[in-house]
Image (cartoon, rainbow, N blue to C red):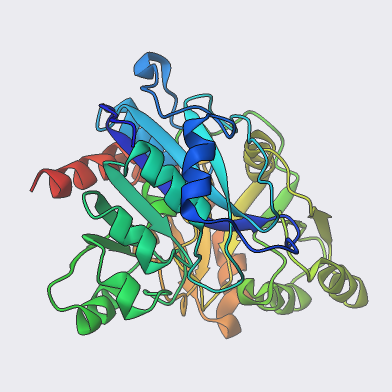
Length: 381
């Protein structure tokens, strides 16, 4: 193993790509040799943090915040590859983030990877290891026993990993108090913090007001998937005047054709963008073209878009049954309503837009500077 003297934060996303290989993954030792030979990318090195901008999506903002404030010297994002030869991934969003892709051993979840273990063998475990979503196998966490390990499910279930995996974490970030309570039922001594990485590590430079025309009344930025509950918005629009114009921005999702068909059948005044998705700057511009944003889901984590709407300067109407994230809806940032009351709430908000100050409130509470300070306090304890 190469001895490194770099404070490193690694985020392991549950994103996977590529086609499944026909052969079994080689042994850990083979991957260790590959990494040491630097055929898969260089060893971790300290980044130049003098010009770090905290920007991008929810995957990037926490590590960039940690680098910007000097909490660590090096940041990486790790994802999974189904094929036999993971690609070398160029910098994405920020040149300060090193992105690496690791071959999966198989289809089992949490993800197992001899490739990832080989990298840890070669260069050591990170100082801080963040694991999001579906998680990684226990042997990876054991290999990182010296790391401070953080987990966030990014979804309504507070723990999407089995107890044998979750017991290894030092801190579990949750999206609501009920999630923290659920974690403590499984692990009574576990440290938790209500600090969902999406809305809490908001970037005021990625999402900001622009001087553009308000050509839409409503915008919904959400994947074209069932749990985002576009049907609640569509049902509300059926009872509202057809002069109300809506924009749905879908970065991905298998239901886009169904959503377009539903809007057409009911003659709703809706424009669709994507899939595929557009850049963050384009999403910000589209938010600025709308008067208000909506979050319709119920079985959802605390969506990052809650505070992204606010930083773009528009108030938010959220489903009152949303399981995580209602703490961001204050009288000055938006409203909540049940599915049956959504249409009435939309009308009320459009008639009282001057009573909201969403960006000011978000800047004072939920941008990355506030949250990285909370995280640093936890780490220092």
